[in-house]
Image (cartoon, rainbow, N blue to C red):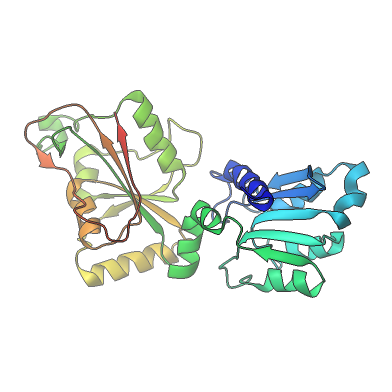
Length: 309
């Protein structure tokens, strides 16, 4: 790695600390370096709180504050240039006199979108943009999706048997009992962590009526996602458009986790309406039942994560 990439990698490490607390704001990390020594670092800790650049500047020891005008600040996302819940970070960096600013990626938010970089350059700072850019964008892929495509990032998740079934055939909870359990305590905890990183969760009407799932994050710290039940098939183009429009307009949701059942999941796959998938594969053999969803080909190369229970 180059020197700039090394410090940007540290920014990404710091940024991830805000994964469960910053939404709908992006995760951002910042590192201040003077002659090869880190003299300050910070990250955006929670929505509505100080941004990463502010926390990084505040972390600098009093005896090192005189070094800021000779230091480089690394930031994983373009410093903001507008007044929101906090003052603009670009102005703070100008005020502190940073000579060099290294930015991971630009901010797609129309209130920023290059204005922060422009302000810094107008003030005489050298601004380098695009260091570990893809990694920085991936970290905030949900934020970028909402800002650029005006819809939530859609993650599919299901558990299946070794022979490709998602459940036994059941008519009712009272008659046939609960759904087949493929998860181990470890993988169940991972599922709850996945829920904690999404703002909303969706199941189909049959799953809701048959299993009455709580859809909470009781096994992992973090806020439980808002719950949705899909009562129409997303394979209908008009229904898709209405559904996504509704989600986007509702509190600016950035992420949606779809947990099933099989028909609901497959309808999202068939409609090409997904961005990432998590599949939990058990060594249990059912022999028959409800077939698991299937992603036959994906020319877009979207990430499909497979965990073995």
